[in-house]
Length: 417
Image (cartoon, rainbow, N blue to C red; front, side, top):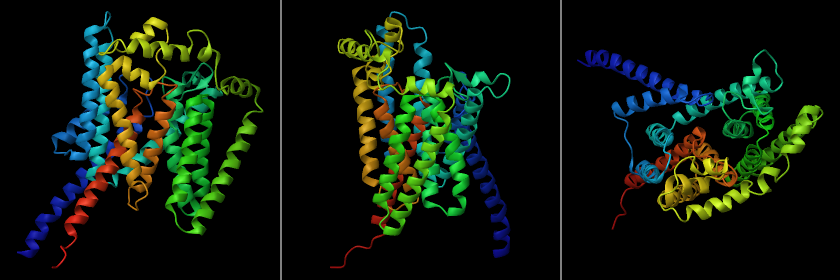
């Protein structure tokens, strides 16, 4: 009887292993496709829609923690839909909100699948790194016009890889670079050269995007992650290792930058883009003045103005995520977005320094969310796929911590009288 039961169980276990392998492969491929968005709908959208449906069809569950994220995203997007009723020209609004709702679903999906098995965090980050290195390489080759037709990977003499905009391409590379930085600081020395090579490719891609937001996000992210690691690690030897490697990596990047600036084409564009305030920022009806006018206009429209409405008035979009939420999603949507961002940061901060298998990923996601909130003052991050991925990762780690606490409490025996 025992032998027969073992024979019956073995094929079942093999089937489960195959299903898990296929599911994780689909997940990795979906994340990988996030690095190649040259048109919409992109392959990423098609792949994610299919697998989100399949995962939930086969019983993927949403915990109470992840349900909080879903509720905020739901309120945020429903509030936006009401703005259609006040739009004079609603062409394109339906597609805009369809993308918004889809991206909200991806955040909930990533949070749910990671909470189901925290080991998927490594799968996701490895796929993200692979996509980032490939798309960064395309951007670098395109910038130097390395082969016929390579110019399709650039725009306005700026690298954009397999993206539609250099300002999205650059920030997309920061998350994978921070992951490689963490691996370099904590992993064995023998892997350091390979990790530095990957970081160098990503750093060059970020630099050649000539996106001030990406530069700022990288600088803030690297410093913040190193500070968190110094707070996390208690031993003097390990802290000294982190400091030494960080300084060496910083020196290497500065040297690489100095070499790159010897190329006149790069030096000219860098000197122009490195200005803190560009002509189109501070000029009359420039970016900052449009921000002021836009906020005043939004204060008179509780339901918002609708997507792209402000851009049709001024010829330029908001370039400010806080203004964007007001004009596109209305007062309720803007307040909900604020609550979602700051509650995410607060809960992530509470759990960030606890020794858990998912701790490194929580730290990286937290740094990315805070960094995106900061650069959101000068850029619109509303439809950035990697932002919703980071949001899902952060909430997944919070959900994992909450479940860990519940299990620990349940396993603790009651005190004897």
